[in-house]
Image (tube, rainbow, N blue to C red):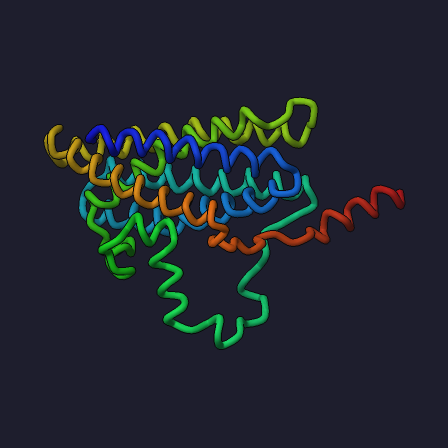
Length: 254
């Protein structure tokens, strides 16, 4: 990694950590960021499961087992965030059962533009959606790109956990859960790095990691710029959890 990329990485990580800390600490914005984490963690489970099956088919038992454990961990992480939301009487919106969007909002051109300008659109620039499917994604691209994400996530979750207040039992439970997730992400980053060293030389691994670090810097820079300019227009991901309210009513009735 060259000096400029390293400096931009530090600056981008700091700014991203600042925004995340503000959102997780504020009880008003906390549910939405928790919902985003739940969707991301739980959403990766089918992908990792398919990758594990693919690795097993290709004869790489070691990688298949690591990926299976990774999927198991991500499922657990999703449950941690779901429980944290439930404690706040919230849950993730079921978008599948929501009314369809208007034609204007649902145009292919608009969706394509949003994907291109999204964090992952920039991070995986040059890759078509088909190339990123578990059945055909290049193993080196998967390992390096996911290694960077897991390594950074381990630090991000630990930082966010630290800003949660200790005098609130709900926040304290979330803090413990996020610290546990951070440890898991560190483990994931470690096995992914080892997986790369099993397939290529140390120099090749470093070159690949540097490439994806540069991609992450570009993606996070664009993300922060959109935040500062108010262009991200993040929609709400949560709704009231009626089951929690009903449980409370039953307790009161008793």
